[in-house]
Structures are given as structure tokens and as C-alpha cells.
Amino acid sequence: MFHKKIDQHINLALENKGIENPIFAQKKTISSIKSGIDSIIISPEKSGKTTVLVIALIQILKKALNDVPRAMVLVENKEEADKMKDLFDEIGKNTDLRVHCVYPGPNILKVRDTVYYGTDIVIGTVKRLNELYSNSGLNLNDLQMILIDNAHTTVKTELQAQVDRLTEIIPKVQKIIFTKSINERIERYSEKYMNRPNIIKAND
Image 1 (spheres, rainbow, N blue to C red):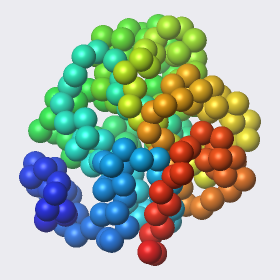
Image 2: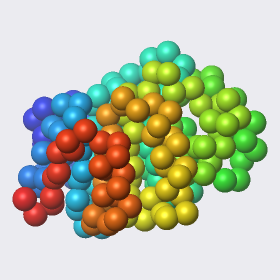
Image 3: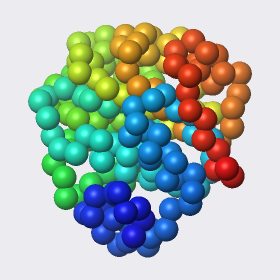
Image 4: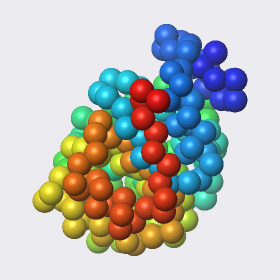
């Protein structure tokens, strides 16, 4: 069993993926996210950060509710968005949570309609999410969480202003950063937007 406090359906899905025992940092990460406090999770590549992100969101949101997103996840590119969506489909297959990806390619008006008609979690690239918001396709009135996956590469210098814009639209939500390392851009974001973030390191 991955974690005794995790929903049994999630544990079963994880076991089917061959994931049975969490490392200590993963337990601390899930607890921190569920507590509602801002958090910075520092962990190396391929250490299970994205899996933990998916588990935590499924545990917190549980089921479809209303039509507008309750969690927004910023990712670096289309490939990362699709991989995360696949994880949601696998681990959350026993829920009715609606997860949609937003990235360059599909017509923005079609994407807007898809998200508008029912989304619990929206995963997207920074530029595309900003574009969707500008086209009145992203209602953030009920948003509870902003999560940045692999922030060391997702929050690029040329995207800093757009990351700021998405954050400033809904300033009081919980903010979670997953990163391989802390850099100047992440430090700036934390100081400007996060409230005493809990810092969790993989080797703690």
C-alpha cells in the first residue's frame, strides 16, 4: 500500500503501476498539500514528483463539481501536459474528475469551449493559459490551487511576467511549486506570492 491515508482506489491504481511504497518526502509532500499551506517541493528528476502531484489533487478534489477549474497546473510543454493527463487517467480512473490540457496547437476557441463546459483541473503551458484567459475561456473564480511542475524549467525568464499575471489574477489560492532546484526566478516568485511556504526536500 502506497499510503494508508490514500483512497483505496488510488492505492490499487498505484499498485497496478508497480508503485507500492512511498519515500518519506512523498508522504510529507502529500500531507503538506492537503493541509492547504503553500509549499515548495525540491526533488530530483524521476523521483515521483508528478505522481505525488496527481495523487494529492485527486485526494483533495475527489469528484467533479460545478463547471469551472478548481486547480491549475503550469507545465513546460505539450509533452509534459499529456504525460500528466495520462497519469490522471490512470490513477484517477475511478473518479469522475474532469482534466483538460491547454497548449499550442488546437484552435483556441475550441479549447475555450471544452474548458468552459466542465473542468476540475486544467493543465497547461504558461502562454496558452494566458491566451485562454484573455479569450474569456478560463473562469478562475473558484480556483483553489496553482501548482507549478518542474518550476526550474517551466518558469523561464521570458515567461516570468505571464506566470505573474496568472498568479495575480487569483492571489489568495494555495500555491505549490515542484522543482529540481531553487533558482533566482523561483526565489522571486516565492518571496512575492507565497505565504511562508513549507519547504520539503527529497533527502530529508
